[in-house]
Amino acid sequence: MSAATSPFGVLLDIDGVLYVGDEPIASAHEALDELRRLSADLRLVTNTTSRSRREVAAHLTELGFQTSLNEILTPAAMAVRYCEEQGHEVVELVVSDGLREDLVELHAPSRGVDVDAVVLGDVGDRFDAQLLNRVFRLLMDGAELIALQHNRYWRRKDGLALDVGAYSAALEYATRREAVVVGKPSPAFFDAAVAELGVEQAVMIGDDVEADVGGAMAAGLAGVLVRTGKFLQKALPPEVTPTAIVDSIVDVPAILQRLFPGER
Amino acid sequence: MSAATSPFGVLLDIDGVLYVGDEPIASAHEALDELRRLSADLRLVTNTTSRSRREVAAHLTELGFQTSLNEILTPAAMAVRYCEEQGHEVVELVVSDGLREDLVELHAPSRGVDVDAVVLGDVGDRFDAQLLNRVFRLLMDGAELIALQHNRYWRRKDGLALDVGAYSAALEYATRREAVVVGKPSPAFFDAAVAELGVEQAVMIGDDVEADVGGAMAAGLAGVLVRTGKFLQKALPPEVTPTAIVDSIVDVPAILQRLFPGER
Image (cartoon, rainbow over all chains, first blue to last red; front, side, top):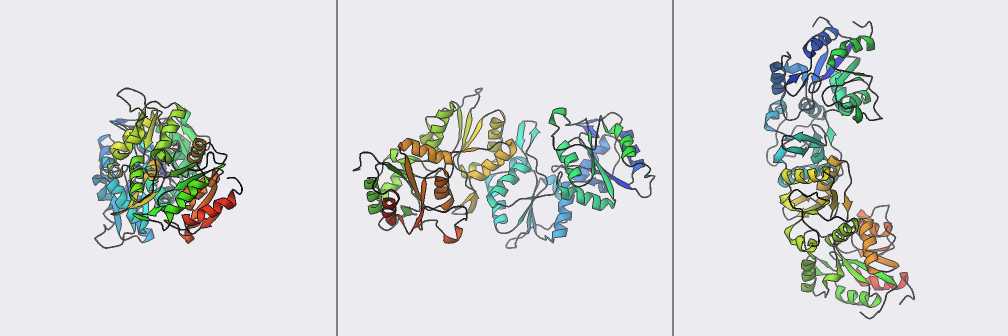
């Protein structure tokens, strides 16, 4: 990292931008190195709620991308930050076992203690009426619902499956109260990321025009869409006009030099 | 039934209007007899999705109210009517076992056959990720979601529990498509009820200001609210002004003579 301080921060989506599945995007390693030369304030941001930061970092290392835990921002990290800000001391976790290590700062409830908040992630086939009713009752007793993300569904190996957003929608409908969403595309996610970087300007690079680009731009960041990963031309919604659209991460350094000229 | 044809129809909610729990409302038997003298076109309407019409009739008989299956309108009956109108031939049923007898007209799917619609009722603790994902995939393959009702939650013996509306909301969010709601307060419910009665005017009598009175009035019926059952003065929403509010079903015959003067 050659720059001591950066005039702009870089937020980089991982899946679909650096790699797809187990295949790195062509020349992505060199492009990431170049981005780090352009900005010392770079973070890798992902909406995963099934893997811990340690697992995300291990997967990146396997694929040849060097990183550190502190460089990776996840919804779980944002949930910890949000609960600290709100003074939520007793928090029920509805998350996969692998994610718990990223939420150890939050205190699990003991019997008879009022629960301040419920953190809702993807627990896959563990979602059932018993679990949902237990969470529902906590919410009706005053706990706040914090959704790690709000996706509608995802494609599992055995077919389409409801994602956290759908289960959150059930609880929101029943309680008549919206969940706080701490993952992308929540403005709070991008606000917190920029606050952590301590920069005035930032750019988000991703393959999801709504969650990455639209979310970032709604929070006042620049948004660059890559044509790799889940990018589909037909899926471009009329309400989002990316700051730039490029073929892949390889084209991003040149775009940043154009967006932030002479700021190095 | 003394009137040969009626100038107006009467729709009467059951639970909270004729009885509460296992206790008949005082003088409700005589009031029901009087209503039948005023209109030959009377139907008992309930939003129950856990009991069949036969079970509803048996419970009424136990409490001393004589009725027949044809006099009882339930969301299940409306679902059958709706599927017939829409030409839905292959329908997946997600309902309690007791309700299946009211849906025998609908053909269950066999393997490899496209499913036209899914009828969603309350299956209580049988709601789980496996069931919801199976329904979700049917919807994504083009099936229509038909919710027997759309209540947010209900109070079970062991505490509050999510109701059909919450599970429907999860599926609606994931598919981005609204469910067709065939129970109260859906206008379709009241339209179908009035069509079945073959009358020009009708009145709905109930203890739920939104589901009974508001729903009926939105469909062009008169709506009479009784102060029994779940009635709570504080719960009167500003957007619904009942045609009349009375202490109990005992006061309804006099109200109908005022609403429909000289029409007997």
